[in-house]
Length: 248
Image (cartoon, rainbow, N blue to C red; front, side, top):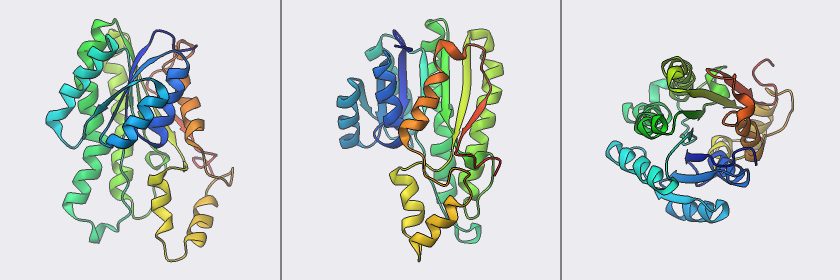
């Protein structure tokens, strides 16, 4: 029970990595609040974890504060936050619209900032805590036709590093995880629509030492370390959990 007594809000918790994190953290003793716009997925994920589901579309900036307040009330405070919600976009720069660029940067970078800011009063009231962002290997190594996604995730990593300095005096540690390819709906959509999906998948896997796709639970187990007491001397880090992609 490595998170016994902790009260943790997880965004993007209706599916994929966020859902796996909420389920594992609950199994490790945390009280969890799950935030997502997918109401059906949220209901199922909340039932799995025994947590509180809160429907919120992070593109609605007016909804974020009330949703975080609802989580704090349900949990009796917040001393842990996981920003896992994200969107991808594969588009050459010359055909990308401004609306597409803006949406990718908002969901992947601006929304985590807004969630963090909304959660700070509750975290300070609890005497500190941990913030974790699920960034991407694309923050560390660029990909073609993903300028918006790479820029947003790289910005998210630097946001966490900067925030870790700013919040150190509040006893709040801030870290990021940079996953490689993980078997989620968002990742499958990035190659299944290719002209030759099998060739596209083979090209993707060739970038990885492990030559395989990661699983959401593997990212969740890496994430478990960072809010736990075992990582008490870790802040401002960006942990690559990517099957060797970063150096290959």
